[in-house]
View 1 (cartoon, one colour):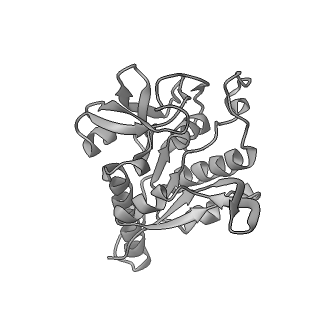
View 2: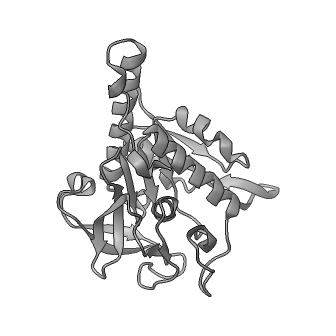
Length: 254
């Protein structure tokens, strides 16, 4: 069976390599490496000024990862920037929000990582805590803490017990969007995982699985993407009824 194609969003930042210093589409190597270790093919998705092309991009993917990165601009959820909120990445916000809505509408399996989970919550009407302490190992250093699943959730089916996870974030879910369910928590009550209620395969995690050795979350995304690709292939070949094509995301799909 062919490997599913997993798109991963990227940073857009100044960078230097060799004799060059210019804007670059960047992605920490841990992201594509984790997709590959989990059995998928990785494709980088740089921000596109034409957010209208998101649906066409998503249509060519089997699964989508919204990667970590800059703080979501508070205006996106009706707030003003706090003193500890980082500078906005407006082009990336617009592009990734368009990708999220396209994936939800199309039933494409979706995994949000750190910022990606926060943006998923914002996309569906939730808000964020703009600053909190205790979820890093210091400036530029990943910390580690324990995450406990909520029994009966999709995440609990992937990781049944408590797990120590690599983390680096200073923002988190505040008001949870109505279409989402909190499916894991840290010891201090921080929401650590969210998932779409009664819809397709949509999961967000607040930590950084690409910085650890545990492939279970990414492997679950890759498996869901592979299953979806197989259903679509069966439909094209006339071997399955059209209603089996995809699990719709429901009214929260945007």
